[in-house]
Image (cartoon, rainbow, N blue to C red):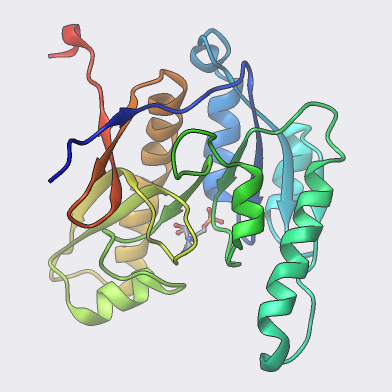
Length: 244
Ligand code: GAR
């Protein structure tokens, strides 16, 4: 095996980010709250969510964006048939990139918070790191990846009968719910859990996990190691010496 290499990612100051969301927006709200916090504002690389994009004109995120004074654009997904699905996906990425360019400052990060559309490589290329095979695009997924990828992770994990489940934050690559894992959080399913209580347990863990992920990134605690045996980039989190 060839030697692994260790790389980090480049951060702008502030980290101007676009947030993509399709629905209720509870994760987005937790991140916007963190952005306002003193901890973030005093950080060396404060997060600045300067634009929100949703594909859903009825999404809860629209009023949340208003409450936080962040510009929100509705970019609807083009309608069509199965036959032109690939073309529509490309069209949508082009519309997203066009929307990013309306922002005055350069947007260097994308955060998917309950965004239910697949991003293409042309969108990912917009956020590509120059020195490693990685885009500055992150996502939260409601399962312990690589188990239960896809759009119905809580339902799928619950129906499968897992004893333990959780949430995962990860970098986004061309494959669905596949990129390097940043952080995970777990919870136990109890015998009395219904799908509703199982989802509620998970969601209450998603919000702090996502905020923790933003902190890991802004504090430059991420290192990437190439794993030659499966060609994966694996994330290592550098811990503070005085943390233990
Ligand atoms: C969250 O559970 C998030 O993990 C999930 O959608 C929900 C959005 O809730 N995302 C996915 O399933 C992505 N594959 P929110 O709008 O309240 O943040």
